[in-house]
Amino acid sequence: MAIIDPNKAVRAWLLATTAVTNLVGQNVSVGDLPDKFSCFNGDKGVVVFVRGGPSHPEIPLYLPSVQLTCWALKGPDAHAIYRACFAAMHGAQQVNLGTDGTVLMCLEEVPGQPITDPQTTWATVVAMFRLTMRAN
Image (tube, rainbow, N blue to C red):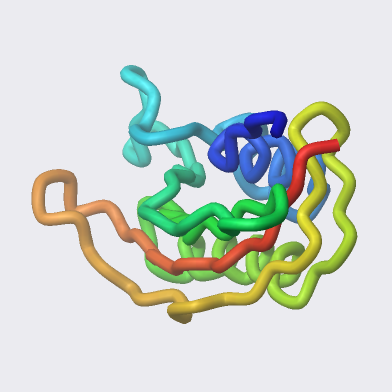
């Protein structure tokens, strides 16, 4: 069974989504914000990471739960980024991401929750999505 990286796949998906890139440019990262990222400089972004989920025991399917954290200086901007991600991902089916696999289905697990980062005071919206994926 081919192994795919759901983090890389969701990052590629969001970078291919015009509504997301219109808001954050290429600032879609995996795991952590880039070192020089700063909302005080006008940066906005999305951080993707798999927080868990099994592989199917009998067929080559991955069932990851992916957390998105949308970053901006102000809450309304973070919510706009979240809404663009939600529109692209929730309910999506048969999203072919080439070598990064195919998303057979994606549903939001936890709606976007507004959280002010205690260290930076930047606005974030955190949401979780459950994907069903397979390698191509």
